Length: 459
Image (cartoon, rainbow, N blue to C red):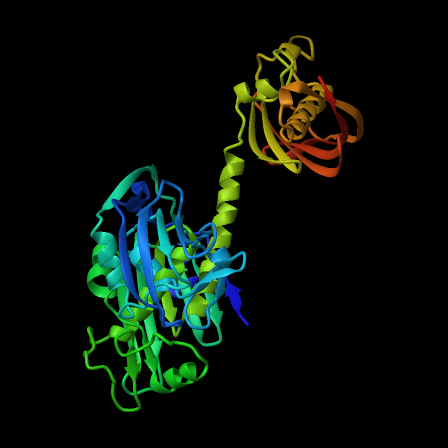
């Protein structure tokens, strides 16, 4: 159905490459936000036609936005993120453990537009009020409580290279940008809608003034079909713009000359909130809708998770103090200075700096100092030991015994001033036993390689 592609993009004569990191976003330093009090809004649900109330409440840092079904036993809550999207046929609906909340995008657009990160949204039914078909009633309710800053920093998704998504003639792509901007094109074969384009920097001020009041719209033949299907029981000329064959049927005139494309931007802002991190980038959309919005959000969320995993791995980088808390070795036999990367039970990259002050140089060819091959293997074994010990809960209570070394090759002498980069990868792991292949590099050239077998034992 869809095609995801990464590529170079030429835009107004400027080339953005897939490796570009063009911008540093000043909003990255901003703090997370919630609201300053409790506020409710009531109205008719679009699909059920039942009266429904949404109550917004403050939430602690790192909570995210959670919808709470207070009409159900135990008041189950659901996080508003892309992993919980269950339907995009007539809006964006989320669900979990057998319960759903329909058409959340207008509420989420108001939350995103104001820069709110943490919030409880309690509902006494399965959908928010339809309101007037825009985000403005929700936005005004939220603003009435005032926005409150919280201590932790916001967590942004910074676009550092072009990302694109397409589905037939529907296209979306994002390029690096110092802020959040949306450029949207719609094209409908109807004389009252036609083709329209709007490009706008999205800030709390611009969203409030130029986007939040834009109403959803539907064509009269769509309305009649949905009613025949038992849907939009709460739909009316007060909850949407209805477009007839040759006239708009609402008494209220359009709020903007290009209200239709403005509402599409509103939907996009709400749908992209599901990524779970505010976006720093410029989004271009053409003939898009909830389906493609959600697919883009899904792709961005996948990339965000990969970044988080990479960051978590980088946070496990070990300095000498950390290494000494795991390995029993001490000077002069501790041969690992730093760990650059570690992927639990899979891979480790460690560093050994070889200096003229190494004690073994006093007796190992003093006139032409060379690091003994057996100590190169010992350094490799210590790195392998760190890889094994990193996977256990209390590494200080364990030891690694090496049970075998095979296929050893020394490719080049290691001399004072060299830095050995030791890369070990697990090729077989079984309970407390492991087999690894290791290579040592100096200036990207292999100086030593071997296969090592090891066992994890109690200290």
